Length: 47
Image (cartoon, rainbow, N blue to C red):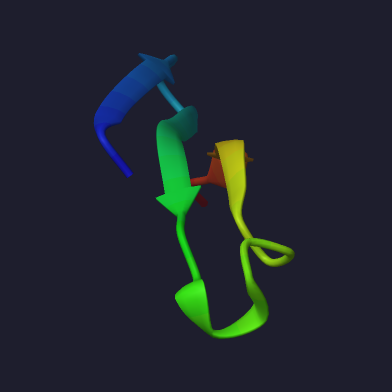
């Protein structure tokens, strides 16, 4: 993952990550090749 973005308040934080993935697999003559955008986000509460 490339970028790390954070939004935050006093008790909540919202970490998020974005990345770009490329896979090239020569074993199956290019049938498993792909480009993908990946996003992962969550909400964390502090008590």
